[in-house]
Picture (cartoon, rainbow, N blue to C red):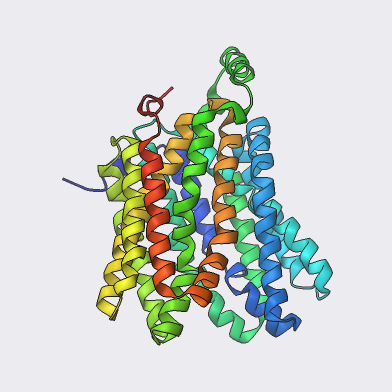
Length: 399
């Protein structure tokens, strides 16, 4: 049996969206090198350079629900086009700014505009797919992201050695090209094909659905996401510090170890989620969180490269199961014409965990040591695992 067979049923619109994502992500190089740019080119301290990243994270955090509602009102596709093109021009402008205070303000605007793409992206994929296709479709989208991210930062490393400004020019240009691709591809979405009568019915159903804060299942789900997301983001915080500082493994070897994660995602994630397309989302979420808990928790016993590689494989499988399942479950819980809003709040949990997780991991490692860090990661992963099992099974069926 062909493990990739599920891709043939993915709608054309989702494929076009994945291609646009690949184009955009292939140019992603400013954000990974932003701290280095701020310290070497702008000449600020590491602490102030970190503050710039915090401003970006804050912008992403507070704007996600707002831009999600924009997607519902004006259409996900339109929001994505504007986001990509506006981000591109802003990044090119960014390279000419040298005043630190102005940089903070522009970074905040950059986050608002750039991160508008994510809820709109997830919302459109949800709208264009049936419940049985969604995990595979979200995995395809993550494949595009990871393929792009295996290209952009690598090229960025070479460009940074020549001229930091090139990072902004190339990143900005690729973002604009991705936006132009969406425009010229003239994607025909299901929503565009709906007649006015159906639209009015859906608008009525949205009005009856009430505030998102009255959806107790969704609020419980968001709460359940955060512990395991804090653990996932240790690959940016506690993990590199522990491997390089405590275990004295060189940065080059750490880069190879992290490539294990990327290669597995590129090769395995789509077939894996295709095979699990009919799984109960509650079970998928719990399994993903459990594998994350085991993978990071096992770092307590890390002694050599082979064992560390094994732990990375374990939590990578958790990641590949968890992320598509969490997006799929959000799509199921959200009213059809409010998917952007729900995806925005869903994205907020990731932005929050990205802001807090790496910092918390580094702090724990520094003050309490690796045993507390990795046992804490194991406990947090288990908390999410148990909470996911308490989600109501009857809500995991299509509307």
